[in-house]
Image 1 (tube, rainbow, N blue to C red):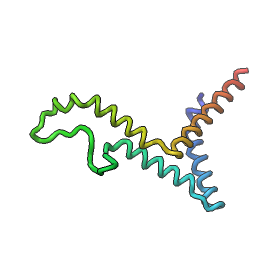
Image 2 (image 1 turned 45 degrees about the vertical axis):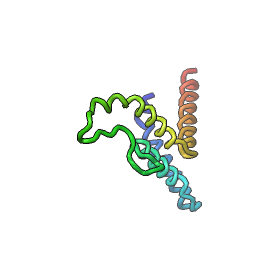
Image 3 (image 1 turned 90 degrees about the vertical axis):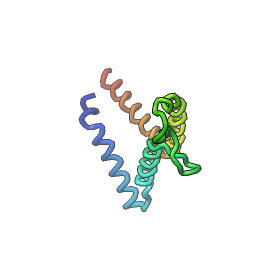
Image 4 (image 1 turned 135 degrees about the vertical axis):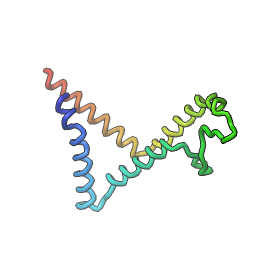
Amino acid sequence: SAWLKRWGLPAVVGVIAVSGLVLEKLYGNPVVWQALQLLGERASQALIAADRASGGPKGLVVHADGDPGAALGYAPTWLLHDAGDALLALASPAFLAALAAGALAFGLLVLRRRRGAS
């Protein structure tokens, strides 16, 4: 646990950087950088409530002459809809690959702890 706290994040960043550089420089394949860019774009889109079809804003909009209290009544419905849109914005092969890599890393950590305990 102490090793993971101290070196977990730098190790992940190092592995991603080294694998990205090796794949790009030796094999001419920038797949790691493209996946990181795609994940960053999708994550930022998930934070911005925008209607993809019309390009306009969506969500809680209070006009200058409107009542902010009345708009709060729509907040639960809006939040539920926005959460669904955020999950749809993240759904991609890059997200699934990152999720699988995280699950693999967690599995390796559990395996390491089991071997250390026995």
